[in-house]
Amino acid sequence: MSINPLDQKTIQLLDSMNLADLRRKVNEIVKFCNKSAKEQEKSLPNIRTLKMRKGSTPLSIYKECKKLFDCWCWYEDELKNVKSDRTCDKDYEIEFKDCVEADEDLENLSADDLKEKGIIGITLEERLQMELDYFKETGEHLDIDNVTLCSGSRCAGGHIPSVDWHSGHDELRVGRYFPDHADVYLRSRQQINPCNSVTLSLSTIEIDGVSK
Image (cartoon, rainbow, N blue to C red; front, side):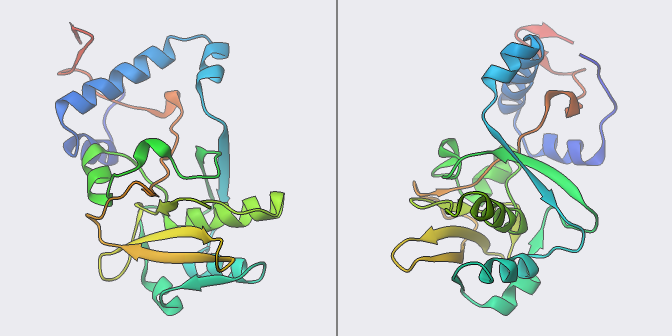
């Protein structure tokens, strides 16, 4: 496994993680990389690739959704003030699990919890784009029973935006939660990172009892 110099984002991620979490993540990466290509493919979940277009914003994608189905937001104009970890200042692609409900293993984790664990969560614009793509493909909706916590975004007041499909009202709902709010139905969606995109300095990390 090649060791590359750390970039600033990687340093910030490492600073937010404790050593036990870091060892666990590195061991997972090493074990995955040691598998054959076929074994890797079998162990990966179904993946949905989102193609985010330059210039897209939470509000612009929300308006695209409104053209196709009913939508509700606590205050539509406030979507202009949402700040996200990733913005569409250029085209980019990002991958998540291809599943109707948000990630089950992230239930009962608040945005604060996810940040502490170094988990990269979906942004509001990515979640809205996912809804739009899925509806165009299937005529169905996502998060029928649960709510996606868009932990990669922040509202102006510090709340965390959320998205789900309200079957009772037959509409897409964009809500918000306090950053420390956690519940079994509230889950984020974690970005899937390919093995070869991970760069870590292992000079002071012990992997399975072997110091690098």
